[in-house]
Image (cartoon, rainbow, N blue to C red):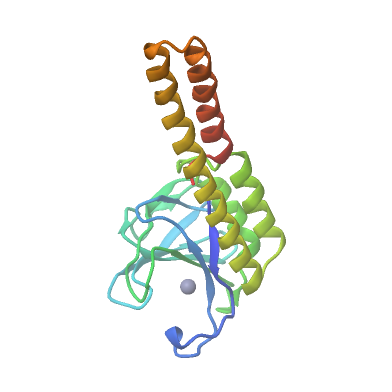
Length: 213
Ligand SMILES: [Zn+2]
């Protein structure tokens, strides 16, 4: 699953009354299945009345907790034992949130918040049932994981935007081209069938390369 970092750990913003961000924000489309990043017990469910919106907290055997916020639906209940990869609910845009995203936090047994960025990759890897990114998408995401920070994230957004636009253009051209070649074939162009086939293969290749952006 594509998890784009949209808010960093420790970030200061008026949105949070200038309090350091206790976790990271990951741009996740609404209603994506969210999974437990490790085996543990649900120790808290947020009902949606607070800033964090709907969400939950999983306590791991070592006492560390993982916090998920701004969810649309929480399917796990307090006391539930969850294994790594088990679906715990759907991502969303509830609480103090301006766009679909997952707030993900890690809290040490002593109550301090850790930077969950390294674990975010695991979370992304475990959440497998969203559209495949395709080879180019994976490369772009990998690039983002390598270079962090505000500017880097902005660059990634721009790159992903360009990929997205490029994919749409190429898909459009190959589809329209295929249709045109078929029409020309019917009209008597001998090579029309061959070109329609080539464009159709190109269309499939583009879809494979760019994946579900
Ligand atoms: Zn957050």
